[in-house]
Image (cartoon, rainbow, N blue to C red; front, side, top):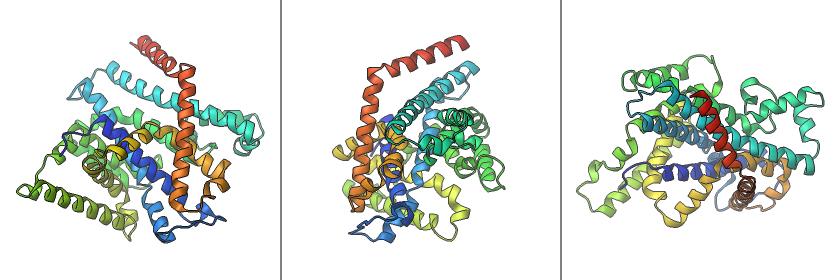
Length: 371
């Protein structure tokens, strides 16, 4: 059994999310590998496509872990969330600057590489007029999806939502404090099922955010992990096997519901529940495995860079090369390996130019001036 959902567990969950994301982007449908000869054995093409659709749950995993982590940051300031304004500003400012600075660094690297090796993409995306520079600056700030301006690649949409999660968390926490989360849950459910009135991702994932806050505040995974359920009188290995089967059946049934006839109705709820099941399963059965756990740890630490890089490799720069490995599983592994290698190089460049120290200096200056 386990005691809690640690920061290391969170990193490994991000590693799992990255793997799911790569499969999702590579094999969502036949258009993703159009013109390529892909061998899907030992599974069928239909199975890989089904996984590709289901594994968009990776977004919900990132949303959940973001809400969970920010809630823990607030709880570290005050367990009852009774925080003075300057403390709230400190948490939000630190998280935002670290997010946007890491994104901007990679964004600039991608622009430079595209300028040198794949000339023409800047003009193709942003246009030939001076307005293109404004579009690029908006994109570099991660705001293109909110404003509706061109973005260098479609997957950058999440950077807009990631920032919105950060800046809206104080409001979510304030609502959560009312009624032990009942009010927040009610607001989240209503917001998910009223006509579209705001940024679309909120409507899809607001319940997921609410669940992430509640799980963090109640230390839900520690409670879950220490519940004997009906297995308390069984030998430990038998009990663990039964729990494994229960988790597996739950995930299978969630997949059926998520892709079934009620998908449109249930999607916001399922995208909040499934991450909890995946995390509970992973904490007990996946993360503790020495080799797999270490691999997930590495992928998780590089998850943001891999997220930003991989689609340029897969579809913009080296489409034919990516799918030239033919076997679906090998395609995913190669894309993962190359993206990880590029991420390692990026982190080496950051270290060489003392990027992280510069970011810390900026944070200290801003927080000192706002104190």
